[in-house]
Amino acid sequence: MTHDQDKIDRSKLRMRAERRMKIEPAGVGETQGMSAEEMAKTIHELRVHQIELKMQNDELRRIHEELEEARDRYSNLYDFAPVGYLTVNEGGIIEEANLTFATLMGMERSAFIGRPFSRFVQRKDQDVYYLRYKYLIESGNLQSFRLRLVRNDGSDFYANLECMLVSQNDRKLKQSRIIVSNITEQKKLEWQQQQAQKMGAIAKLAGGIAHQFNNGLFVIVGTLDMLEMDVPKDEKTSQYITSIRKSADRMEQLTTQLLAYARGGNYEGKDISLVDFIRNTLPLLEHTLGASIDLETSLPEVILKTKGDPSQLLMVLSAVLANAAEAIEGKGRIKIACRNELITKENANAFPGLFPGPYVILTVEDSGRGMDEATKKRVFEPFFTTKEVGRGLGLAAVYGIVKNYGGWISVESQIDRGTRVCVYLPAAPLARLGKNGRND
Image 1 (cartoon, helix red, strand yellow):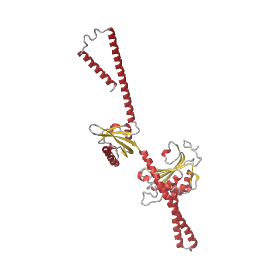
Image 2 (tube, rainbow, N blue to C red; image 1 turned 90 degrees about the vertical axis):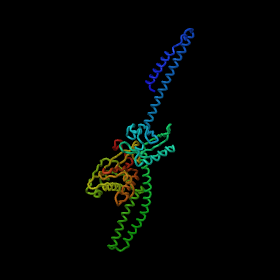
Image 3 (tube, rainbow, N blue to C red; image 1 turned 120 degrees about the vertical axis):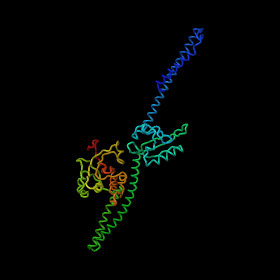
Image 4 (cartoon, rainbow, N blue to C red; image 1 turned 45 degrees about the horizontal axis):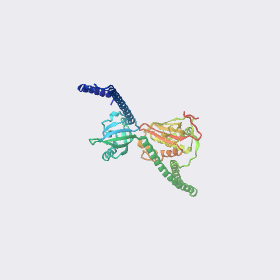
């Protein structure tokens, strides 16, 4: 009840009392014959009664204000809770929604009222919602499940739903509450963890295969050396031996890639300027890109050094460039850039597996056809390819080398908008980088 309504009700009560006094006038002898003491006592009782009424009014006003404050607190807690709250009837129609849910969905709160909740569930997940909600209504048991919700702009996000039956009115219509939490980041972290576990298992297998493969190659190459010494030299025999040796060399390169991917391959670490390394290496790789591809570089004069093996870094650069060149059909562009970056405690969460500190970043960006999300998720898998014939380990070997160095690699890509690969390599020990991105 508002303050104005309270005034109106009091006025009505006073008018009713005055009308009753006119109907029931005081008796002629009610006050006559009373002594002064009795009159004083009566006046005292009236004053006490008046004070009591005032105190009761004050108490009612205080209770009214407390109820208003409690209602405001409840409203704030409900509307600005960290999760979305919904009240849904038995038919799945939304009866109430808080502001948090409206913000999550990018809509006005009033737009939900009277609409079925299933309208905002991603089409592929609607069966999950219907089955779970039906079971909630029938059993009354709490239901907790995940699905994707669709925002007003058409984008979707992963949400965790907790549905509970809260009341049943006189008409036996059941009502439920739904708590909605945005778990998109959690799903992303879970996917990254699954990928890391999968890649770790594959890496362990690759390492075992590489070592066994290496043992077999050692025998083949040793036998070839003995054949060259013992077998009489003639043109036909030499051709056979040369052909076998070339195949053995290719298999040795594959073994090196397997060991690099498995993160168990030994490497000779030395301090390397990535800028100098790229400038010295690019002339050896440019001819592999094709004449229709323009190569651009953005290499600063001052760059932190990183610790690595030149042969493995060559494998990283050549694999990333080959991948970029294959994505370009006809004329295109590839840009290579380097920069320093300081990973702080505040932004370290954006770079899975990296510790805070200075890093050197190699970026290779192409104007090719790009990749969809499904392809991007598998790009580091061994022997994965979108072509009819696979090329080998490719970016999988890059992944292994970079992880072995304590670095990180990211791939950003969109269909028809190209791809950008960023390789984060830890700066060599004693290297320092200020927050302005310059060397200290």
